[in-house]
Length: 357
Image (cartoon, rainbow, N blue to C red):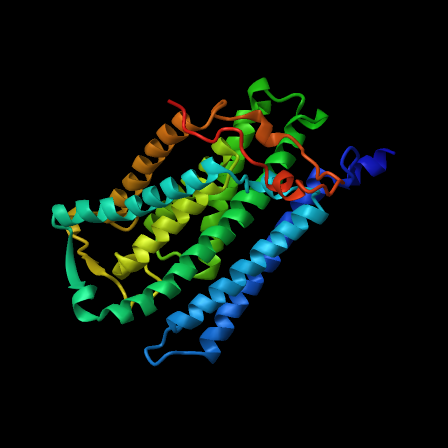
């Protein structure tokens, strides 16, 4: 019986915490490997004249990869972890839709406000206005692929990293700190709030910086800090709300704004005249903390901090419950019935459908 408890979570009939975590890491590694291989293969096989992947090909690849990631994660969560979609953050309802919209606006603001500040202080200049150079049909043809890429990345990364993987890591960590192994540690180390915060740090800054460095490379320490700060904001929004809505919205709005407004910095189509406004960043020597963090990167990190504060205000006003709700760590299991309300039960209509006053 003791050996069986080591491998199986008895009340729910699924692998124990440690094995679920190892399985989550294995599946994530396979998905990451498949994605990086497909990108490298396409770059070798389908190359545009200017040496970069065509926008339509990148959009198609992103759509296929996103669908594959989402289906893989949901199937594993359903048949191995015995979870419903709502258990990994897909909690459909009015508040979910509202969070998506607010998240998209805040995500766009994290790109536009720092750029406006850098323009105002003279550390950036406008290179070109895209609308003047291209007709309307061209803008639509370039914008739609970028929309697909942004939506695919936002949904896939949120469900994979900040839904499935972080949920498993948080539960595994919670099980470890409550075990006899950790009985000699100080009491605060077994706090659910600390467990959730550590899960947000591990599956946010640490994991996302590592993943992005493997996929595309991170040029310097400042860029890593910027990505890590942004990832922590995204994961913390999931922990505090138990929903992926804000994470998806923030990722989508940020990517869309950076690719179509500020393409000269972070857009996926750099070098192709596809942006509404190209912004050039002049790294002034007096304002650069070389070789670690440049002035403009400090401004962008500051934008992420402001976003986090606005996010906390929004969560406080609209989401009931404690800041770190221990129910996030509760182990839930898929029911066996398939009633007409089965779909609603899987995604879980939220109770709080209107913002608090």
